[in-house]
Length: 244
Image (cartoon, rainbow, N blue to C red; front, side):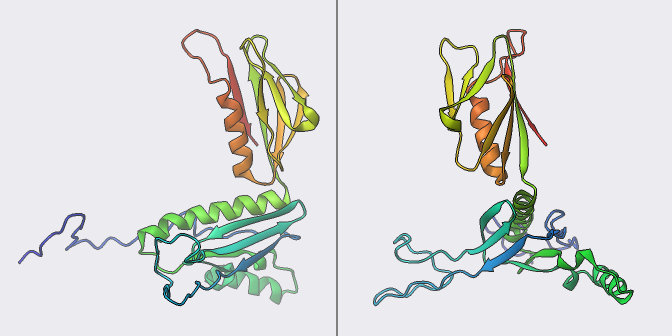
């Protein structure tokens, strides 16, 4: 007898396909010298006289009824500090504890009296790799952590290039605004957020630096939105963003 199929339910009777792991999430995180990674567990849920929430309960009372269950990972390095909220099913462990090959390499190097540079590598693991939600967040969290480690150690950098007849820009008001002349009958200004450093190589090329890659990319996207490309007039009038 074929079991009844409910809406949204997928029945796989003869499939032997295994669940694929995240190609990005299984890569180890290299932590350079001078960078520390600290995990802060989530606070316990608030308990009141008439309301006792469970860890899996999502009430309609808003943040006053229940505190966030996301743990916080703090990454601090020579250039600054970044914080990332991570779901509770994500954990950080030493990479050699989940990779026997890496553990053997570290043991061999330390047995020879050498320093194993990959002993401090971290691995991102999930509680259940068969859960679709956890596999979706696995690679995302690993990418965010990798970008943050790279940002606090060496920083992120990109280039803004103005291409067009008469296009030019300038940094005004003590570095708070980026004033652009991009083909309008008036100049347009882009607010430079805190933590983003913009330097002018020439009136059409700007170097953007920041330890937070998300903030830097959002600023470049807002600047590029001030003058979208026009491909129908046969001329290049554009603001290019080149990531390094």
